[in-house]
Amino acid sequence: MNEFARLRQEAGLSIPEAVEALGYCERTIYRWETGEGAPRKAALEFLRKAIERKPLQGGAFTFIDLFAGIGGLRKGFEPIGGRCVFTSEWDKYSVQTYLANHSCDHEVVGDITKVPVASIPAHDVLLAGFPCQPFSIAGVSKKNALGRQHGFRCEAQGTLFFDVARIIEHHRPKAFLLENVKNLVSHDRGRTFEVIRRALTEELGYHIRYRVIDAKGFVPQHRERIFIVGFREENAFDFDALSIPDPSYGPRLREILHPEDGSEEADGRFTAGPKAKVIDKYTLSDHLWGYLQDYAEKHRAKGNGFGFGLVGPEDVARTLSARYFKDGSEILVRQSGRKNPRRLTPRECARLMGF
Image: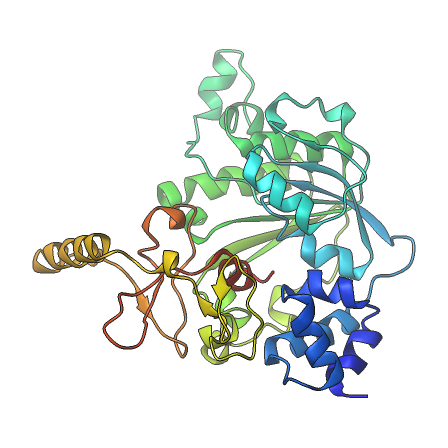
C-alpha cells in the first residue's frame, strides 16, 4: 500500500470523499491511490492533518457560525469534534459555496440583524468573522445626563458587532472566536477596538486574548487578521504558547497552482487538454493587460504603490479580495513565452484560502 492510500484510509475517507475534500478529479485520486502518479505534497499534508484532527464521535461541543462566508472558520472546529447548530450568511453566492463545502442539518439564515436571539439554538462556542464598520465612543457622562443607554448598546448600535454582543449576552456561550482585519486594533486611534474590548470584558464579563496572525505560515497568501478569543471562565489559554508556523517558511504558490504538466487530470472547467493546461479564458486580454500596466505606471510616476501583483510558483500572493473577479489585478500569474499573465482559477482561489 502506498503512502497516499494509507493516509486516505487512516483519515477515514472513501475515494469519493477524498475527491470532494482534496478538490481533484476522481481519475487523479485513483492514479494516486494505485501508485500510477505521484500525489501532490499539499494533498499528503492535508491527509496527515485530517488524521491528527479526526472528529470525535457524536460531537464534543456545539457552535454557531455567524457571518459565515464560505465556512473558513467552521473548517477548524468540526475536525476537533464540534457540531454546527446555526449558520448565518446573507450573500447568496457564499451560501451556495458554503452548502457545497459543508453538510448542514439546518437552514442558513440571512440578515443576522433581523434574527431574534431567542430563536438561535443554545451553543458552547460562537464563531464570527464580523465585518468592521466604523463606530466611535460617545461620552458616557453625556449619555447618563440625557438618560440614554451607553456601553455597547449605544456605542455599537448599528454595527454588526452589536449583533454579536447581543447573542453572547443572551446565550452566554462558554467561549467565542471573533475574526477581523488587522487594522481593527488601530482604527480610529484605537477607539473602535476599545469599544469592543470593553463590551466583551467589562459589560459581558468574558476573559479575552487577541493576536494578529499572518495566514502565509499556512497558505501562500499574505493575509493578516486579528483573532479575539473569549472565555466565560478564566483559564490558561495563551496565544503565544500556540505552535503557529513561521510565515517566513510557509508554502509557496506552486502548492496551489495547477501544475499544467499532465500530473493533474483536466477537469474541463478550469483546465483542458492532455497536460491539463489552464483554459484561455483566465488569460488577460491585450486590452486589460495594457490598461493595468498603464495604470500602474501612472501611479508609479506619482510615487504611489498602486498596481497589479505579478507572481510565480515560488512567490507568496497578496491578500485575495472580494473584488478579485473584476480583473484579478492583485494576483496575476506569470505565463511562459509572450503570453499575457492570467488570473487564478476558482479552484486555485479555493486552495489559496485553505479549501
